[in-house]
Length: 363
Image 1: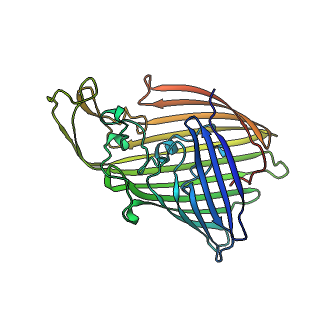
Image 2: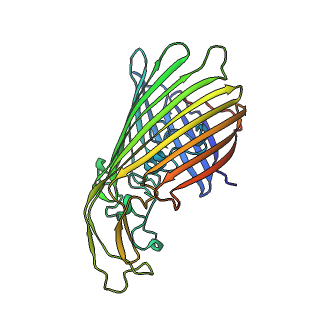
Image 3: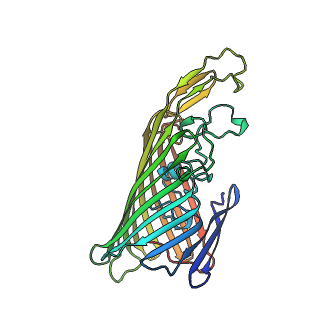
């Protein structure tokens, strides 16, 4: 049994000019402030400003909370590149509702790059450590050391993001949403930093007279270029330290680690309160991960659970007892290089309950 997430959400109008939200999350690692921001409500020319701590407007999955997911877990590539809890930080965001015949919005943001959730920037990259893990020195992606401090000296030390999203009615009761996203900022392994890019699509059809029935297809691709400078690695002894003095240093060349992946999911509402879905995922990359242990320095992306080749297939069945509660049964089949047998199966049974009023979810 696990408590995946307990979330307390507060939202309301501040005055005629601003509305505000705060989301406090209780998870397995304790209590944290997930989001707390204010957004303008009365700016002219289709403009809106958001300030505070918030989920970065990147792709479809990242700006959403766990209770809006159709599956129990988020896609593999989102966890790898955007972080297991989503890419978020403190900053400011400007949105512009473009005056077009169809819905179209441009969003640009500027945030601190050193929030621990920013796995692709100055946050916690996860995966393997280089050197003594007991000293608490978290490493950059790919096993590279953290060379650069996460101090802010100029605007180049910040996380910049941009997104363009549009919605089109495709006839009848169907609609198509398209989006492209980008982000760039510093990382601790190189002065050249990180570039993120992505594109997403969602199509949904609801037949007339049957609001409980729907067919929805969603897909998203996310990529990352992560620059890493060269360094000198010293093989470690059996106790994890270079204590013998006989180890031969090895120069590791600088490189750009490239990682990308995608997911595609199809959902079908087949009875009142019931739906089924199937999700397929693929994640891969190039550039080897550095492993320094057991008196040797090795290069292998296949041994890195955050960067190896991975394929996952996951069907799910959902029963919505009401608008405020649901039960989900999900199966995941994974094939990944880092798994001992090369593959693994898992079954998830998740229950979700919502107390109180809540705003409508996005399309």
